[in-house]
Length: 131
Image (tube, rainbow, N blue to C red):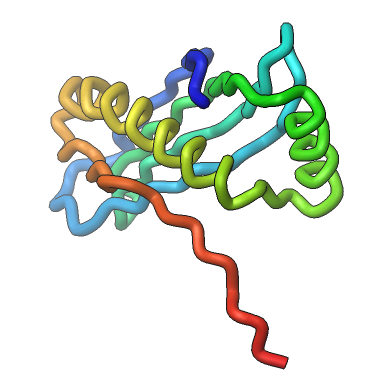
């Protein structure tokens, strides 16, 4: 369950004028920690405007209230193979996307850019076993 979130860094750059032909949104999960009894997910959210027109970057943390044993297992799994349990991944990625899309919209406005698109909900699918 989501407890809170925090944005620690915002960077934006408009490199050149030109038509806005496309937007790519990237969410990178950097680290998982146990902080004051909460699962802390450090992330970087990047919006890239195609043809190198502009970029927006937000860096922050999402805090989730999870059972301590479950949180520690998630941290170990992430350290081992940079993967999250699909149940946590869906909630965390959807929350990060919503939070950052809203904040990036304000930044985009200051640079006269189209706001990033907000996905309604992120759904994580595990690949089917094809063996």
